[in-house]
Image (cartoon, rainbow, N blue to C red; front, top):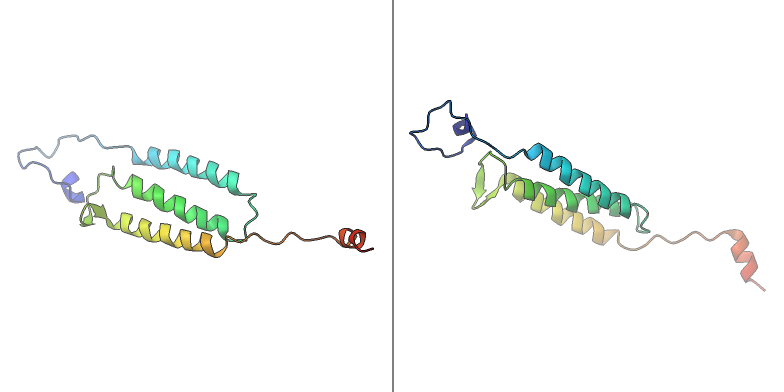
Length: 120
């Protein structure tokens, strides 16, 4: 079965051999909860709309990049990196670009009463 995923196994290994793999689904849930915690803490930040989505893109890209190291599927095409890792680098770069574009804080609305109190 693992040969179908491109994993190199010894030719002498019988096809019914059970091979232990990492439970990447559990790793993704754990990292997803960490991402949720980080994003939840950043939700009240005073940056413009879209900034939090950029932060999500960075975190999701980092999460996928890390998970790809322990997956059983071996589709390495860029040296030691998989296609998903290359896409995750692009996602991180896009997230950084979004964060930089929307990094300026939104202006705080001033109430009319506050303006009236300032004028002599």
